[in-house]
Length: 214
Ligand SMILES: [Zn+2]
Image (cartoon, rainbow, N blue to C red; front, top):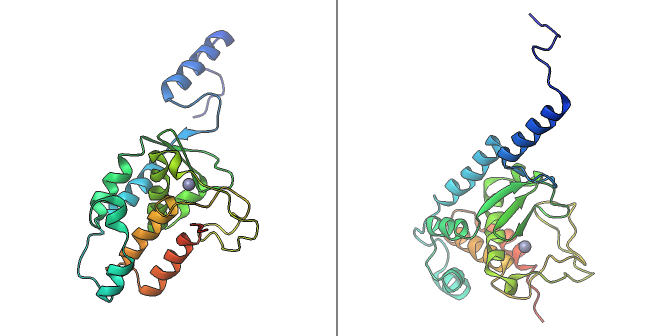
């Protein structure tokens, strides 16, 4: 049975006070559109790390000399390829996750906090891992800040075609920044057969396209 008559009435001062207190305890920032992840989003985030943690080195599936020539993982991370170790590496750098509008980016890093945009949650698990790995690198300081991509930059953003990197701060001038480390990770996935060589190469090339050489 629906009764439209309120059970009790609040005066407006009390109502405003109660709303404020509820807001305060919810942990939501009052003056921005950032919010905590909801249960479904937290689950998607957790699944991204669980997937990463299944990726461990096994027998190398590519030509050994090609592997030795191109592998960068250990020289960058200072440990051999391991999804579990990489998961820890990322999680030690990201203190907090929020959801909110990220404009021209899938995610943004600020002071230990990663702001995830709507599109993050519809990516597949590998792309989510790449985004987290990329953002985690920003925790290592200004050395890894992006530089502006050239105006004639013609590579597509593989995760969202609406995002055009040309003329935007979406490139790196160092080989071990956010894009270099995702490339190094993808190389290992191809070498160990977690991705077929075609997919690994396309993905690797796409990340490495953001590393500008002069
Ligand atoms: Zn970045």
